[in-house]
Image (cartoon, rainbow, N blue to C red; front, top):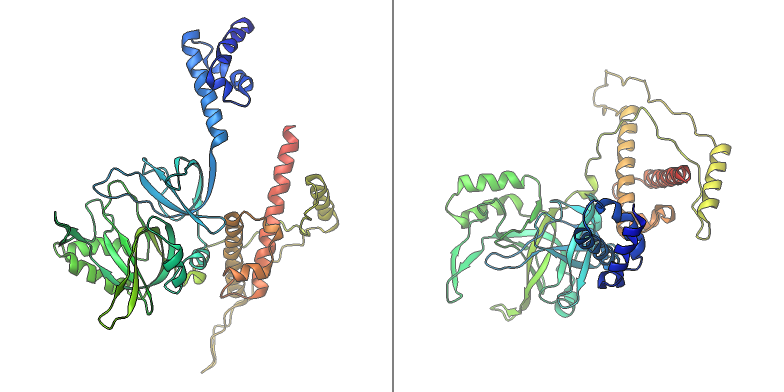
Length: 443
């Protein structure tokens, strides 16, 4: 690096607004200069200014973390794709982009950067930092609004608000075109030419609020449906009823009625109407971006696990709020020395009896019981880690009662939940120690 040339370019850049808007411009220029020094001064200066702009912009960006599934826009408009996001604090926001591929398809926990648009209340200029599949459906169901939340729908919600809702599907209806005068036209097929859903799901209701969840026609939108057999249903409905949207809707209704779902989207309209018996109702129309089935969420089978090798088990107590990283690492290291890892317990080799006496219930083998318990523990451990990521809380400070309140461990025993929590804490401690060791190794 020629110090004379470098100093000359720095003096040139100091006169620019890009230099003045950046907190540490000289550090950035020293880092970026070797990349571009082969160019002439005329060419290198714009590249270095761009580096300063990127750095200043990164400092000003907001970080958005939460759960997202599906984005939508509207056919016939020039709007960006919008994704509602369930944030770690349980609130909802929206992020928008002209690129429909910004966020991966499916139920995802994402980390994004973007800038808040005060006028519209959403985040633009978004970029994906990280995305990973999200599996803990019970959290979504507990965070969702239902028809029972009458005060929220009537007094605290307005058109354009992002919402998360839950309920049981009662009807599936086709959507309809509008003629030039705005009157109802022909029914729209429930599948568009790109295979995307176009229909209304009405949730069961018995009081003031009616929830109408609508997958509307899209330009570049990417709605997501996580319902069992749904892709097969969409393929069949087109071949069975190719030119009859109303029969298509009835076909879907037969398959989907009484399924419990969680939907995410934004409010289109909240109206008020009276029945023939002068009963007041409050229909809420929601533009869906995603719909997932949550029936039996707590019974979701755990992934198969290899049980012949147990992971290292660290004996530890929860880190104190006033404990430094050095104190924490020293305590854990000492704990490992004084509390050696217990020997691995081999799976039972006892074979179940083949002969079962008449009228006697067949017995489950100890090995089968153990595998089922291990599967439950692994599933709950994943859910615990996922939940802590969502709310931004250390797993080391979690307790069993708090987990039970959010639905983790439903259908299992307290003992297995305790073991799952301990496993999650042990993995967190091990990861922290590994990170600390790697950090010490690079110093």
